[in-house]
Image (cartoon, rainbow, N blue to C red; front, top):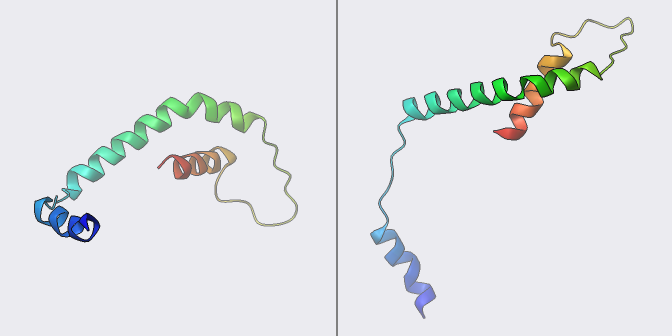
Length: 77
């Protein structure tokens, strides 16, 4: 019986929060910068063990270090 009334009461009491996108993006940028700064030694260590063998194909646009950084940031955020 309570289950059918709970969502209605919850919606009445719940205040809708507005997100300030400017500060949200600024905080996210700071979090990303700090994460990259903290992970820099680990990224360098990981890149040292990666060996890339190129054939006659086009040259990659990103270095292995940039690729590792992008993958880590994708997984973290």
